[in-house]
Image (cartoon, rainbow, N blue to C red):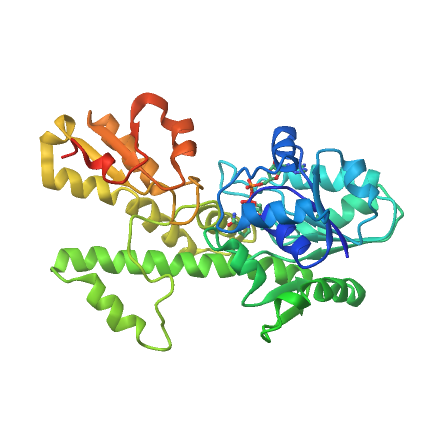
Length: 381
Ligand code: NAD
């Protein structure tokens, strides 16, 4: 198929590479001209295992290219256009959809033939309806607006895209649903389901899934804090719980709070939507509050252990991104810890296998950066 993917970030790039690799002709479109230039020169602006090689192979094979010109992106007459544009949080917790609506308007003005427009971005219920309205107000061409939320995880995004647990398609037309289904058939040969549902149900499925996983993390963090207070090893408890087949181990690891570009913003956006509909999201709000508190926990433990000495000490930190296997620092708990240590007057030395460049852009010369893990420990207390 001929496919255009709008947005060349974590989701857009992985989708573009994997769709090209399965034989489709893909054009990646992004408004960031520097990023587009880097991609067409064979570079990769993010770290994601296997992604750079896959982009390179498909660029060379002529199945993939990038552009910042929307006319050019649509000139190949794609049957399918994906939206993989960011939906960052606003101050009130709601999702900022302005870039998506801007794109929808411009798409409607440039599109030349009937197309399926599928939203991979995580968007609140009703966003597909609004995209539909924007498009209908600007063009007579038949555009089927579909929801096709993305469930990949950073750190294993390529593998997740190639072998999803399920594909969710929210479509108001059978024809459009079948096109998305056909595109995904190579990725579900292991009998994973392609679930076709209403567009609004699909939008909700993505938020509800992320909010549920975040709930498990906040739950085990709360249990861990209680274990600390009772002198119990939470890992023993986790093993005791996770071996129950009704519970399982996934997302049941206590830590310094969840971060990243999805869970924090998606929990807040779902809570915002609930308030808009006069539904009190007690669990969602507690999940968020527990997580905000958990991000303070490492520094609190350091203070309890070293008290007033913290300001004269040097701390080494291994691992700064929000989880292993990614260079993504969005909402990473380590950023809060580093700020707190610096505010207390401590020195900070850091090592991360792939996150150092992004960390430098935030802290510049206020902390030190070390290529070797053990090098970061030299002189550290
Ligand atoms: P990102 O910030 O990495 O990338 C977004 C890209 O969109 C950027 O390159 C930006 O330049 C581009 N962009 C902005 N406005 C544009 C426009 N008008 N036209 C074309 N391009 C435009 O974001 P991401 O992490 O890839 O997330 C994208 C969406 O997918 C979000 O809604 C997110 O919640 C969702 N999602 C993310 C993940 C993840 O792990 N990152 C997983 C599943 C779903």
